[in-house]
Amino acid sequence: MLHRIKLKLHPTAISIGSVAVLGFYGFNNQAFSIIGNTKNKTTVTNYSPRMAAFLATIRWAETGTSGYSSYRKLVFNGTFNDFSTHPKIKQCAQVSGRNVCSTAAGAYQMLDISWNDLQPDLGLKDFSPPSQDKMAIEYIRRNKAINDVESGNAEMAFCKVGKVWASLICNDYNQNPKTIEELTKYYNTQFAFFNKSKEI
Image (tube, rainbow, N blue to C red; front, side):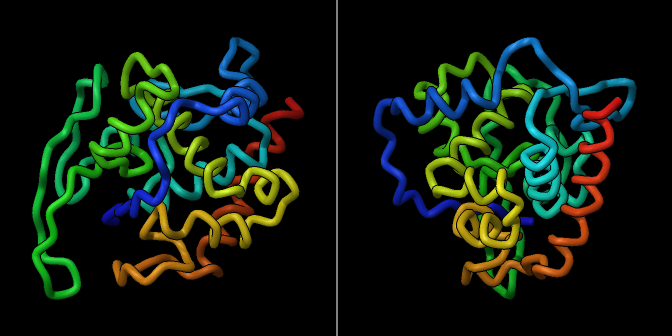
């Protein structure tokens, strides 16, 4: 699914809020939840079950899968293997009767301008799965949806970030978004999985 960001988000220096949020989501070594396991590769994080499920649902809506392979997807065709930086590969295709070109890549279909914005602010050393997750969480934070995610108000959170991800609700990109019913169903399945994983 094509990913478009209308950057009304100013690429300023990372705020204290960003540092606090990223610290809370603990990009550290205390891991519990499995994001994806494909071809013997596992990405593990210590996000809350609600955040892990929310991220998984965005990955699924954007790429068709929430597993590890989503982190390698190019917007229209193919995959990339070099995680050292954003691939910055422009692809073009017909979308809703018009020719659209995009550099969207990865699990959250981040554009090259998203990488240019967030990489220095978040101090990202690469475009690896954990880095892609950090980028997604920063956009969730910037759109004031963190509390909605963590309180279980997924529908409101999906709407708040709908202008970031074209596959979600509450935008007018006309790029075949998922319905709220589809998003909620997938989210609930993922939440049950991650909640159970935390208890193990």
